[in-house]
Length: 274
Image (cartoon, rainbow, N blue to C red; front, side, top):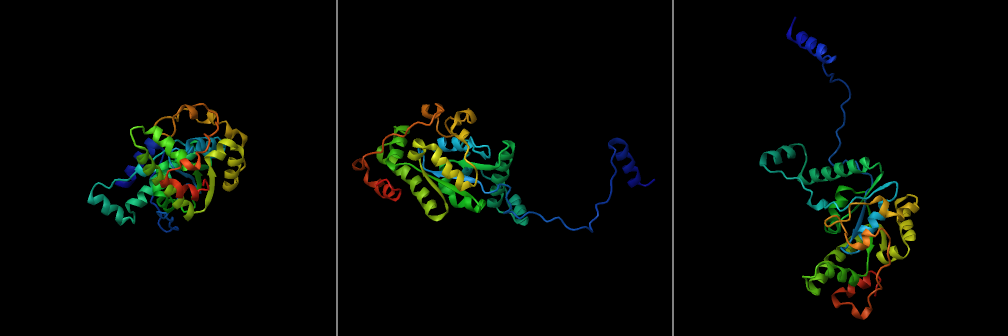
């Protein structure tokens, strides 16, 4: 008995299987291109900080087809090629660091959508506005929801959350987010909604978003406290008493136009608040 027969007998007795040669004359299995994605047309909410994005993503997560997790900070989820050897190895496979990061984001998020038993991802992290081009690069079919709030209301809320800052520091920081939202809004298709309208008539605003996404509006979306427990904490999004209430509460009255700082007048005008 030769060694091949002896090995096969041992494998067969211990496992019930036998070894056979892999036939190479069949059609080759095509490998996916690095740009292949598992997620189909994910949804990204692009907004400034303190714009009500936690409320909006919580409401959207109440839809039977939408998976809307807490803030995921994708910008900080990176692939680290720590040696020249691994960098050259990946290069030989036709994979750059950015390809690998896109694959990581896509596979991780697709896994979570499937695990949740949903069909579509809704992602929101305010820092996403600074990498909206990378989001498009990863998912060319991405769908954007642009969420606006009165710019001075954003700044006042941001300043209250950062009391060690001066008002000018809060304006400078908040304006960076707002300008990036506007840059993306002017560059990409999507649906634009306002926080003030969301709190005044959530059914109408969410119906508009659902129409854009090609899904039916579901009244259960407004019951966000049932579907989103345990994620209202620092680093995950808003964690204030208002979001913990589980109820959609009215927005504060709009600032008087005379109160608006000069630095915010252009973005207020662009968003129709002045």
